[in-house]
Length: 131
Image (cartoon, rainbow, N blue to C red; front, side):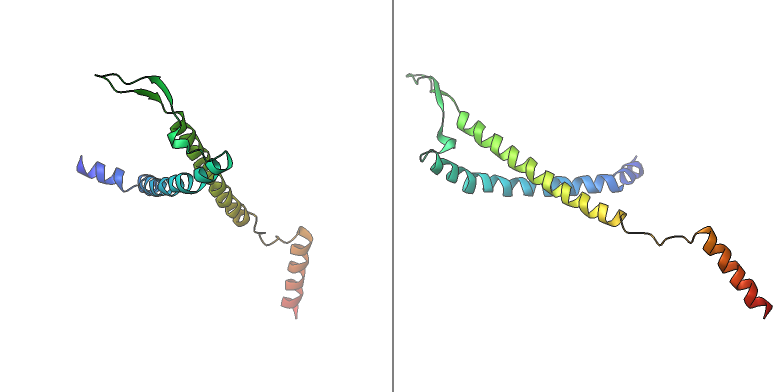
């Protein structure tokens, strides 16, 4: 069983997946910072100094024994923007990788000689051998 697990874990797909998950986690932190620290403050400034993370709708007021209940739609807006920026960034990254692959595939292969050229080459070689 240990040998099977080692064989499974060392396959290329599993290692690639692990690397992808680790890089994705780090990339998510970068995009989260971009949204929270750059995009949202600018967007808040444009719409009149609103901090989206603070936007909430009170559903139930606080009483003596219970806390207030809020619908945090500002956090939802922020999460949607996170998703849109991450998905667009991944789209651009995949598009760039695919364009590199296409360039490699499109490299022209040397043209094979036509039947006439092959025949002429054979005739030339035969004439050289006669001399």
